[in-house]
Image 1 (tube, helix red, strand yellow):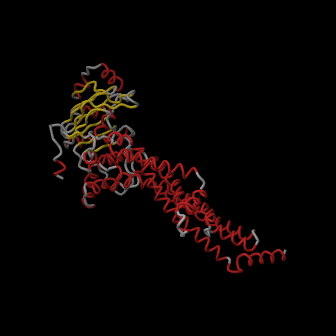
Image 2: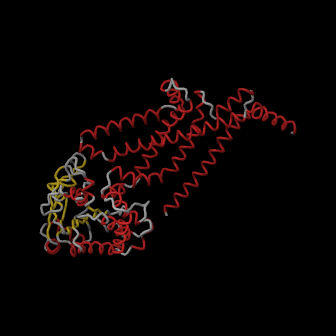
Image 3: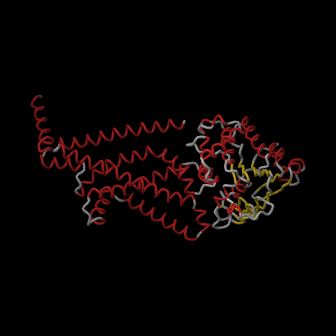
Length: 244
Length: 255
């Protein structure tokens, strides 16, 4: 028993203390969080824009068609672009997207972290867009009509009436998307970015001992995800309470 | 404000429709099949008819919530159903009340009422709130100004919906079955508000099943069936001496 304990302790020292290797994990975790946070922001921005374009097109199709002219074609083209974007992003693996953006789109850039943020943001945007569109479409059409009948134009109706209600309904789902993204960024190592997963793997390669670094990485992910999940459920309960 | 009003070519009518048609599914369903009405300022017009007769479609066409397939809608002499009309400006002058109230659940009663005046009429918050409180007092709901819609009864919600529309100082009010979603004992309080509004001279168009309201308040009753106007006249003509057999049958079935 005691021997086993000493063995574990040596393993621990070897993997994390020697050469200050624990710092790799800290740096990796930092990068993971930075990528996730900014990618979520980009994703939310893209998502809201796409969802607005798509639902505007769906909801105002009749008016657009009647008025015809340039507005109709602009919306038709925008809607088409959004559809292609959604199909491509949701139809291909995130690793492939990351590789393409890293080696083809930004082949000349050296700012790896930015590229990763961009790639994961563009990826996440597609999923957020559909979450948000679902939220907009779930708002009772009477809310649109009430807004429009008071004299608000479509955009004002969205901003003052529909989107505030949408945010409330989709916020928990959006937070879950953030949690999913946190785990998805673990493939950033494919393009040589030192995220949490890559850091653990580097330690394994250096010490030739897999158990400690990989389990440590898993535990860190798990802890963060559990904390975030808890926060989301608290948020959910708050939102539900304010409905009363 | 004056410049805006100059676009109107008042011709004695506040609202007119000319041969209004609304087809769905490439014309297989004809919700409106050539409806022409004209309403004078101050008139109270009640539209009745069996379900599916097109009465709600007609009302919703008047502020273009429903886009007619053919025909014209004129508001103070201006064709507001034409292409490239800024319908939002006209809608500010046409209040609408819905069957399901459609209050904004994320805003308080006061915020529900002041949102549009502040954003669209560019009133200050104080001005808008002053007006809102005045109106709330009229419908005896001033004490609920800071409540949320979910805390109100159906009748209270509908009274709020009416005064929310009135906050925009509309020239005409459109009521789309305002009491149909209410428990029977709450209908009276909403009708009372509407009666007072009629007495004050508001131009009103109302789709309703409340024949008592129609008899008492309406200047004119329009009976619709199958997307056309079958008969119209004063409440006396419609209710005591109906001519058309469809109308006779309808009145028998509901009275």
